[in-house]
Image 1 (cartoon, rainbow, N blue to C red):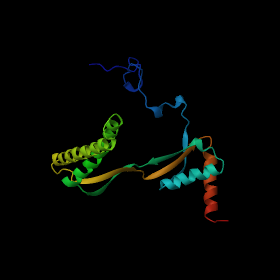
Image 2: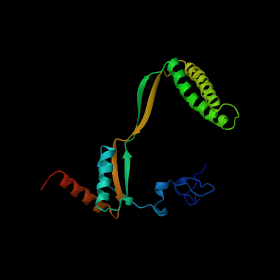
Image 3: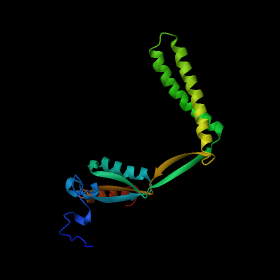
Image 4: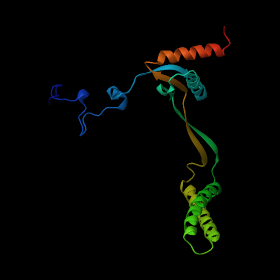
Amino acid sequence: MTTPSSSDNPTAGGVPSGPSGVPTLPAQNVAAGATPTVVVGTFPEYAQAQQAVDLLSDNKFPVERTAIIGTDLRLVENVLGRLTVGRAALAGAASGAWFGLFIGLLFGLFSDSNWFAVVLSGLLIGAVWGAIFGAIAHAATGGRRDFASRSSLQAGQYAVTADAEVAEQARQLLVQLNWRASGAQ
C-alpha cells in the first residue's frame, strides 16, 4: 500500500475537492472582502456593550464598522412548573382554539350563514380537538418529561469589536468616556 505524495494530491491538507472546488469555511476566506476586526472592549452584560456602542455613536464614531459579539454561550432552561395531563390539555386547547379561530374566520368569510356562529364553532371545535391531542401527546411521553420549561441562549460576556483601521480611535474614545464618567480629574 502506498501513500499518495503531496504532488499527487492537488488539494491542500488532503481534502478532496468537490464539484465546486475545495471546501472552505467563510471565516477562512479573507480575500472575500472580510475586514479584520479588533476587540476594543469586553463587558459582562449586553446592556453595557450596547451603551459603549451608543457612546461611540454619540461621538460621531462610524458605528457601522463595529459589532457586539456574545461569547461563552450557554443554554439555560428555566423550569416553569409541573406539567400534568390537565395542564397539557389546557395548553392544547389554547393552541387549538387559535387554529380553530383562524379556520372559522376563513369559513366565515365564504359562508352565507351566520358569520359569528361559524367563527365561534371553529374556535370551540379547535379548542376541543386541541385539548384531546394535548392530553394524548402528554400521556404518550410516559412521564419522561413532566415539567414545562423555557430555554434561552445566554452569553458569558460581550465583546465590542471594530474594524482594524478604526479600532484605536474606538478604544481611545471608550477610555476617554469611561474616565469622564468616573469623575476623575
